[in-house]
Amino acid sequence: MEKGRWREVPLGELVAMGANAGRRWYVDVGGEQRIVGYRSLSDDPMLAADDPRLEDTEGNKEYMLYPKGTILVSLGRYSRGVGMLQEAALAEVKICGLHVHVSDVLPEYLFHVLRWYRTKQVDRWSQQRLKSWPIPLPPLVVQRDIIEFISKLREIQHRRKRLIAMVLDYTKAQYETIIVKRSTYQPRGTLSDWIAHVEVGRQIPAHSLQEGVWYWKGRPDPFRKTPRSVEAGDRDNEWFIQHSAVFAGPGDILWYRHATEQTEGAVLVHRWERPVVISNDWIKVTPFPDVPSEFLASYIKANYQHAGSLFQYRDRGQIADVILQLPTVVPSESDQEEYAMIARAAERMANSNKAAIRKLNILDESYMDDMFKTGTIDGRSEEVE
Image 1 (spheres, rainbow, N blue to C red):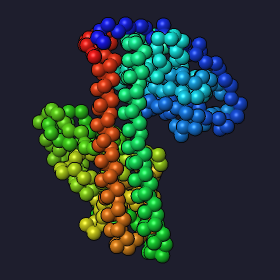
Image 2 (image 1 turned 30 degrees about the horizontal axis):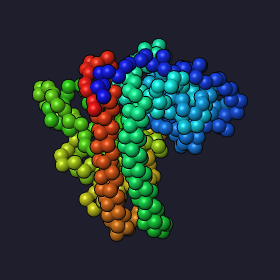
Image 3 (image 1 turned 180 degrees about the vertical axis):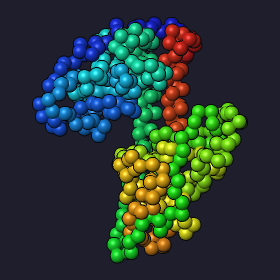
Image 4 (image 1 turned 135 degrees about the vertical axis):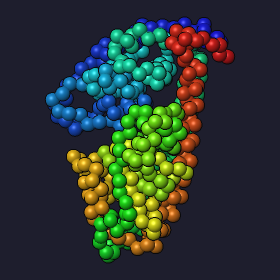
């Protein structure tokens, strides 16, 4: 069927929206129920009642109660996520519910169209904008085919993520067995016994890096495989590279200085083939030659993941001093090396699954582009069988 012949209908004609899609619900006592918050929608989920992404309610606060099948969209400055309820649930008032009230569009199809829209729209969303968005409406049989294909992709992604979680759990268990339990009667020390050098990165000004330089900045992304590379730069800033930038080399540990207990990818081992410039969001930790990087990274992650509170309000020099004085229990060298071997193997397995997830994400985005882009939405109209 030609995609150009799919009719496009404004979203406002297909759904009841906001207050018309649910009803207000007042909660007296906090913590007794779970709700859809803004973070709950960060990775565009299908949400069940026991989903761990749900958040605790606050007391003396009003929420919206939406029925099963409602699509939830973050609005305003929280315009970062789209979700769909598999069961009735409470949601923050500024999360807009969309409930399909026509027979020629399937709710899950519309959810995927809006999920695709979210990847293309950088501006803040509002109910007024949502109402005017054109939604391509193929026949129901085509909508079902689209849902089936995307659902299979997402299921494979979820399996890969579960495998990664299992690998991480196994690594943690081995850490407890090899490092924690065997270290009960080992001597005490500080991280200075294992660390040769600590340095906090520096702010990377715009256009300050030469073309081709690799750099690592911002919040950690556990699915980013390699650092960013400067595509084009000002070659007059060579002084910054030689005299001011902080480089991390292979084997160094990169530690995100604003991490909390929940931050993923906050401590990692530099495994790339060339040095990278690190921003002031990151700390470079260089272990002594006889200390395995994998062991030290895991020790930091297990004991000092909460870098954000450790280093709050401290300058660059103070942070280095704090790190070197953090207390440790010193495992034997053989235990360090045994755990490092396990950690390397686990990391390789996790990375292979992350690479597969990246490819699945590309396939997912490409498929949605082919299905949902139209002349009205994206400036083109193509034929699709």
